[in-house]
Image (tube, rainbow, N blue to C red):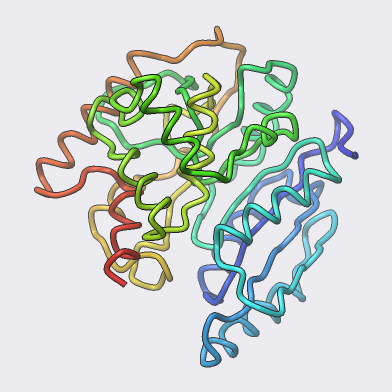
Amino acid sequence: MTNRLDTPAPIVLFVYCRPEHTRRTVQSLLRNPLSSLSDLIIYSDGPRQPELQPRVEAVRQYCRTLQGFRSVILHEQPRNRGLASSIIGGVTETLQRYDQIIVLEDDLEVAPGFLQYMNDGLQMYRLDQSVASIHGYCYPVPERLPETFFLRGADCWGWATWGRAWQLFQPDGRLLLQQLQKSAQTKVFDLDGTCNFTQMLIDQIAGHNDSWAIRWHAACFLADRLTLYPGKSLVTNTGVDGSGTHCGADQWLANATGSLNPGVSVTRLELHEDVMARAAISRYLAKAGRQNASKSNVFLRLWNRIRRL
């Protein structure tokens, strides 16, 4: 294992067939002062259909030219693994070489203070077993949230973790669902009914989606682990414009990404879930659900599109 305490965590970026989105993600990373000190490890998935080969190759050609990072390693998959297998495999493989990592996908743009926040969080809580990850996205709730706060579970829009925490990941969705139901925690897991995470897990088990994120979240939730969030988002999702494999255009999702916060100061917090921040996010999602007269959860809306396919 590598990663000295004075060395930024490597950035693991998962890309597919969207050259412009990939370019915007990389350019946003390069606006971070720590980018020149960070290793960038890219996993490029193979095309699902032959007609996507030119777009996959365009992404790879761009990645081969990248400069501005401490180093760039490009893993080109000859065949399509799918997003879940690619992320699970890539994160597991990288954490066999490094103690900690930062994970991004090709439709996430980050603020100039993103890498500093991530590395500060990784350093601050690296020895705290109750903390599973650091997250860069936060819902644009109208209330003023703390500079940073903890929520139970894990998340997936720009995140970081340690090898010790990734060991919690459970690929068997059935086992996770059984544990949630047996412990009567499905309502709490669903953020008091405002996020239908349980249904998303059921759909994963049934093969209607292949979400790695719901299994990561459920595994950390059941282990009573915490994730650190910024009070204002350092990540915005550009993949809800209709270009993504797993979702079409959705204006509500685009609005839900909010605007980027330039930076976040990380200070040590007491290791427990912030009940006020949790309630504010629940109210935001409940209101969003009423306004849309449909599913209030961002991730469920994304994966419902997969079910229809």
